[in-house]
Image (cartoon, rainbow, N blue to C red; front, side):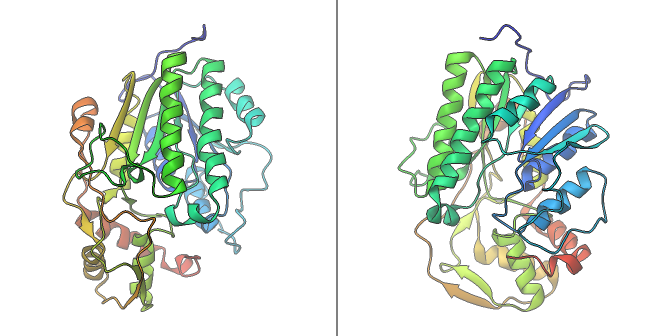
Length: 361
């Protein structure tokens, strides 16, 4: 273990600390940044601002963190208005750098410049179906990027590591999914890379004494969510009268979890645990896609038109989290019901309808 080995912070500490959040322009990571800043901490965020989905959603989230609310979001879905910056951007206790965690020298410079209490590695190539088309990009970011972060933590004496994983690793397991389930063969490169990242984190715990929290997220939704996921797509399509592209017969189900609950649980995972895998999910009976469509219809006051498509073999039929372990170790449980969460998400959509109209789905 390195000589300079600060103890991991605990959630709720009154002492302000400095945290590194990777993937900071992302849906979950940006909300984690918000909550850390609200608690009085300093946050260094990094993100490569890739164009897997429309970067204007990333710009919207970053604009809020950088105090630029209302700033133009740009017109190009593939080019962030922030991507050309070579220098760190700052707003109070938040600093942002355009940086890819695959770039080890650049990542080391960030670690050398700051004394981090912990790292939230929330950067990842997302999307199950997209991983089938270009699996090597997923392996590079989700595995090599994770190892770069871990190696920097060892070199610079940052003991606490929080890793974002996914419920996708549970494919083929019995529901509700428990953390001790024997994982089956991955159904997609995305799930494969998440499992590999978990193995890396566990290895660094055993070899270097890092304190590791591995969080398996279950279908996160909420305001400013990803446009490749059903909630924002369905809201936009139903509002505009466009037929919904629905893969499968609508009975496929997910354990939907509101983004604020996920962000809160992620920060609670700063607690010293040794090395633990934790489910962060709704913990309720999963909602079918048809039930989700119904919730959105009621919130919008409009009826959906549905265009059925064959189900994807890479998609899991259902997910359902057993969250007893997170309750026991973190004192965490979701507070926002799916009904309330979808209502909040639709209200956010209404307030931002003008610019969301042009978002690429």
